[in-house]
Length: 264
Image (tube, rainbow, N blue to C red; front, side, top):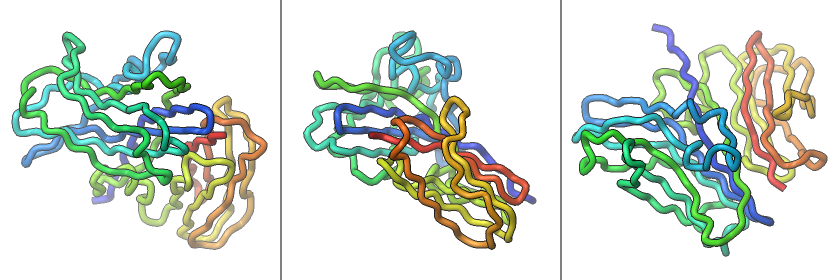
């Protein structure tokens, strides 16, 4: 049976203050028991809302309602990154909320001062036995501790083979046999430069471009015939403003895109 692809979505909270920057990404929320695993969807009704205008961080960073069983645990793929946060007193909060009252039934506190300067992916597991049978939802929020931070929420995507275990980091390296692979840039977030890598199963014409969120092309990193194998390209954002950028690989008759975040 040929493997099918699944699009994994990571929702990222991006926070900045002076020279400090914080990124918290949540991907693949799911309920797991010994017998099965159930996927939890993001709350799509909040996708178009704007933080500070008609919604809060926690409303953007929230899932649909789910009802855990007594034998199930909640698992999420959690990516943390921090830059110049040693003196920060702020915290990121993961909450399990009652769907009717909005009350927080469980809270996990993540001090941002402990976020590493290299993006780290880990699986966070929560035992929900005490609230089994209750309609709840997962949300992430931010406690500023009196500090002034600017915030935004963005999405990242990765394509995973159905044989993968759903891990966002592993998904970045999986593709169908005989097809080009575009990997997540590193470091990400970055300032001012980052490396983009991709592999080609066979020689051919390759085009690698970068766009801003308005759809304007800001760089063409490659537009040439390349041999099969691994390729690494450096992207310099010195002349660009902070923000999310999309890079696109066109090769072998297919197109792959990913997002990256420039922080100055």
